Image 1 (tube, rainbow, N blue to C red):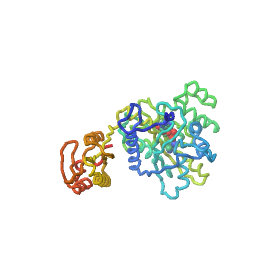
Image 2: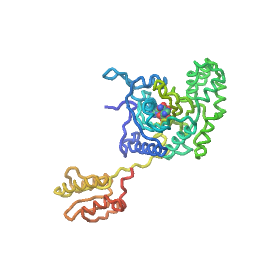
Image 3: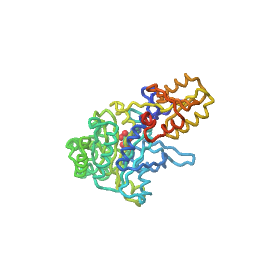
Image 4: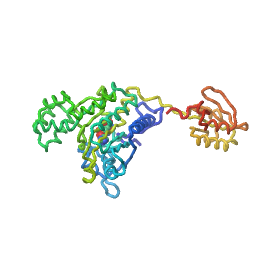
Length: 427
Ligand code: HAM
């Protein structure tokens, strides 16, 4: 039976085919995401993958609502698989923020579902690093969040030659809109045209702008000038002070598709411009208030970084490490009489956090040796009357010692096996 279109399977390396997805690569990316988020003082949270449909219909905007994976459950509740994390998070914050000192800095790595037409960089499920900050209005916090976004990409080996953060602001566009006499009821339509500017034919955008009293030439001039507002200027100088200035540029083509953004917005793209956005986010100062029915009013900002485009970029730049499987110890059993003692040794080694395998059913010694090589074992160990025979498969040297001595080495915190064997095979 085939898997559903737009859904992935993740395999351990070595991969069964060229286009298969690697579970090892996914772990590698998640590990870096987690590490850098924690270094920035973010705490991990999670929420339900299935939510009431209403959570999205009012707050996320048309684009995401059109892509919802929704259905009626057996209790006839209208539900949807989460297409993004932000509404769940805003609800969690609205109900629990009193328990946490501000600003609240949280991250999550949810799997998200969007019923999109599957294409390069876009699937029907993906994972997203979400990092969000609540309770601070100062642009210094926008800079802190953008720095985190840059550093997670740098942690994966990407440089300023590989990607750029395009920084913009809904406030800048709102000022533009007001200064040209835009009518309040046309704001959403105007933002929609700007959002689609790079993907739409110029004559279509020109016509749509004209219908609400704007000219494409004037809009394009504003984008080309790329003059930072005071708020964006302060974000840029904050990032420059950290030495991250070369990773960011003002780009008013970015306005973000989601409805809830209110201030600075940004997206990370590969420099070549051949892939879709790697990450996107911005300020959404009104969402917590909206979701709490006005009870809680907290400024907020955050971003989402998807794994699909990122993985394509890392692969194309050769930045994924060579993943090695491999165990530490293979306990062979030549004489079945030794099985109970060997099982005890396997257990003791695993208690000592060693990666251990052994012949689960009786098998010939040459087969066991072959299996140990297949598993890329570092050591073969065999229990016999004299204690244990320990063979280092890289040097082929053998030593005989008592089980107790061997376990002392294997579990030893000082030296011991850990000086001879890497503690865990470098995965
Ligand atoms: P978004 O721009 O919709 O933002 O998604 C963020 C990133 O997730 C995109 O840049 C892209 O890399 C990835 N992504 C989105 N949809 C797909 C898909 N169908 N297949 C593969 N990758 C995808 C949000 O979701 C906001 N909630 C982010 C945010 C958090 N804003 C504030 N806090």
